[in-house]
Length: 445
Image (tube, rainbow, N blue to C red; front, side, top):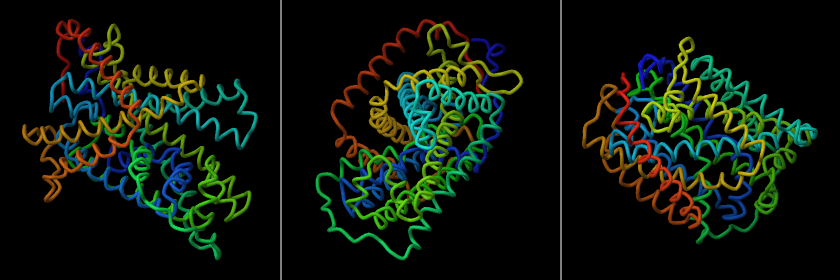
């Protein structure tokens, strides 16, 4: 593919700083899960549910340390796809890129579907097929337009939604902590064999940093921005998730919280402030999901762009790798991804597949942690002096063990479906080999 036709990676604008990266990561990690997961955690582990969040936070902290080091070593657009490609070559990198993009597409589609459902609680007319489809199209057109017109605008929208999302959740935590009464304490649930299974479910609530790192080619000073942005986002997410779980259990009690599986935080807010509190939380849920999709739209189309840039999309690689001559954004990849998500969200027939994103992301994390070890061995330094956690040489190895333990507790049929996706991607790699050999190399920064 010709650099003159595609624009080339060197034409992308490095406009994402620490605040933008942290806000993007936060918006992707805090989607709709925080509004429904407290019920599932309480049902599985009772009053000890916060233990599962702590384990998830520890596991994700280990993964993010690996991402911080890999992201400070490799500055190409593509995030984990670029890290793994630099470490293990194009074949393994391509498989990781496919896992990243497929997981993100189904996750975004599920969030869009949930956004429409949450909006229908506030305005029942939106539950009808045509108004629901119009809402989804309007939201996607708004987000897509902002991101096509420039990465700076997309980053500003993400930062704004992070603030809007934080306020209601912090208000819920503060109000719940200050109320003069609490539900009667229930007997503590035993943390038995359900702990691993619960962690395997809740870990998805902490996922998302891998998507936020996809636009690495548009991050300023990656060796400093990546570790700082990820640290800010992770600490905020960890404290918020644990605080929300504790407050919800205190206000409703474990039994009532577990029973309110559809909207546990709305039920808790109604106990605190009546119908007004429940409405505020419902609005916050819609805004949270909007912020999630905004962050994912800023980040994940760059994976499709990167696959096109490297010739992995049959017949369409040149189109997907195009950079807008005026806005300097991968506009074709952004529009194509938004179109796919709109189709999936409006049909609402794929929701069950969103669960598979959990195994996909855990597999991707495991490969990325292994890639960090290899990048160290190769001493890759594309963005200055790389980040290294003091006394952190063993971190990638510990992360691999923890991730393998979580995967062990995941359903077997989910693992088989992810394996099938990997096999299809491997076939695609072979099919596109002649085109990639014939295409001239694309300039890198």
